[in-house]
Image (cartoon, rainbow, N blue to C red; front, side, top):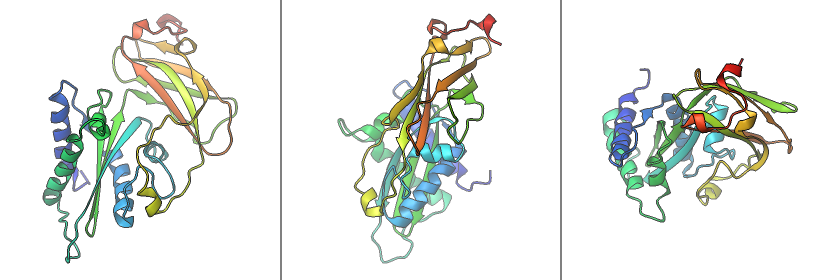
Length: 267
């Protein structure tokens, strides 16, 4: 691997998987692409002295991930530590020396107690399949990002610009007995750049707070359960300039989902 921290990230993912399997959940796999996206956000946060799910241009985790080329649903955990020292570099950055900092940061997230346990709930979300581990050290600033990924389908290329009328969505499910059952297009508006001071005042986020401007129920989808292929067309009610976010829900027990076409009717 070209990443000198690959084994370090894998060690963190092994701990995450141990925490998940301890409560009966599936383990997760390391996602190098999500790690790279998270590294960039961590570098900006550590370099500018803030902690936020938004970045300086005002983009949220799913927006940064999708603009970089990702097509999965993602949810982010963040942690930050500041070391006050007379030394210019008080936090060691070699792969072996940074690992204890990463594991301690993860342990702090797992130690959360209700009702302030959103990070722990994210770690133990049954839907997650992969996770990216991003981090950065700038002087005495240390930042960690866990970008959890829900990977259930492989989509064909989606348009980067909003088309007129509708968006064709086509792909294949990656798990047997899983199928899509709802799709929605959210209008999120234009991002608002913020200063580090403003970002330090932000808190939790959601990727479903936008206005729904298009949706497709399962009886308007085409799905071949034998091959896992699906096709749907999302109607667009354009709301203006800004970001539009497409979400596709999937679940198991696919035979009980009321699709429009049966397997032998699918082209």
